[in-house]
Image 1 (cartoon, rainbow, N blue to C red):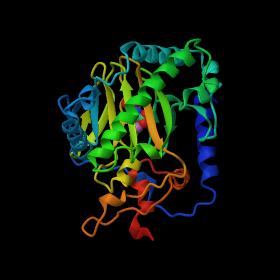
Image 2 (tube, rainbow, N blue to C red; image 1 turned 180 degrees about the vertical axis):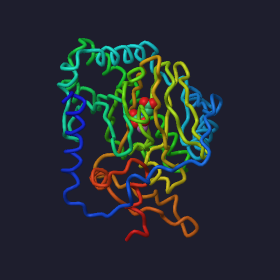
Image 3 (cartoon, rainbow, N blue to C red; image 1 turned 135 degrees about the vertical axis):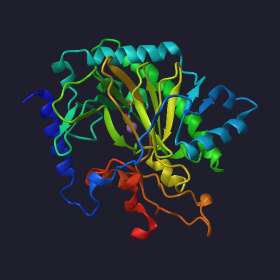
Image 4 (cartoon, rainbow, N blue to C red; image 1 turned 30 degrees about the vertical axis):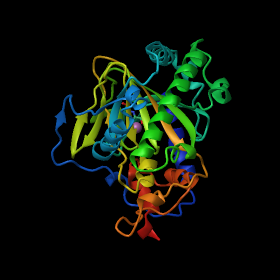
Length: 351
Ligand code: OGA
Ligand code: NI
């Protein structure tokens, strides 16, 4: 059995173990992704761009409005002038590539069947029921505060802990600033979302060039939403990210020195569906390998995630019940669902 297949088997075992005491029934997980009648792929020009420097100046309220509009209409935006030094970004991307170019035995040291492990390597796998090969390899790890987790990270390449730590600490500042702006865009106190924040989990995603498979289709990552408040994605210069906007697939091509921020499931719940969790995927590139760094920003385990009280009234009844992030997270492993439909379990009607 190749290492890839071993990991796949282990992942399935972990899922099966989590599914033992299933308290919920759920819709067919294979039907969770919408089938788009018209799949158009538009090129550029569809990405709202937010200037973060202006957020800190006299134009703050205008920029907050732009952020609110982008979250509501598009579910994502690009952020320029975010303050993460270009050198730290380049170091992060170079280190990520170096790690994924290491011999496979070296990388497999980080394999773990435990989805809650502080660091975990996930390899590509074949989904034979759908005849699909998913080529993404990723190294996922906790990173806030950096000092608490750094010792669990790879020490090969030698500079990994230092360079990745620097990037994580910088992107954390962007997260906090953007979450404050998002809170305000919803008419909530500036720290409303930030005070539920606990974690910052990073996934270094590596997409090999033109991965080989005999199956019908190869994806980088299949269509999904992220179970986060927001995700901050930094891409290298190779396109691959696609999102659904207005029932069409849109390419979100890399814009130099900018990061992409998108809405996750927890923000959909907290905003009472005003901001919807973004459906997205990554396609593979036949000429070049691709690296992206996803920073998943998620709440503390005991944070209450129902719709903010200020956003509900008789005309806007709460769509979701109050639930803790722990409850949501536990249910995620039971319902094999990769989109915001997993929030349906917490809808008010499902009482
Ligand atoms: C993710 C993700 C997309 C990309 O890591 O959750 O959707 O372009 N990544 O790498
Ligand atoms: Ni994602």
